Image 1 (tube, rainbow, N blue to C red):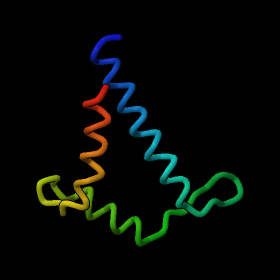
Image 2: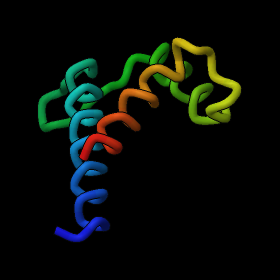
Image 3: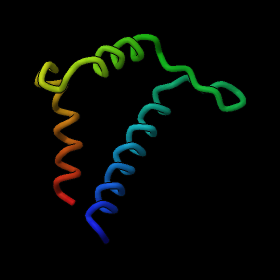
Length: 73
């Protein structure tokens, strides 16, 4: 498998893991709709607008774990 494909496969694993987590914490509605708790939305908005270097060590941990998954492949 080409390096590009390996990276893409790991990125998909990371995305899939995230989506499973996200869906697991949402409130499900009949018909398939989901509601994300407002506190989570506020938290993620702050994180997505913060550079990695400005995250706390605890907040960086998740990104480091994902980088390790990519690096180990």
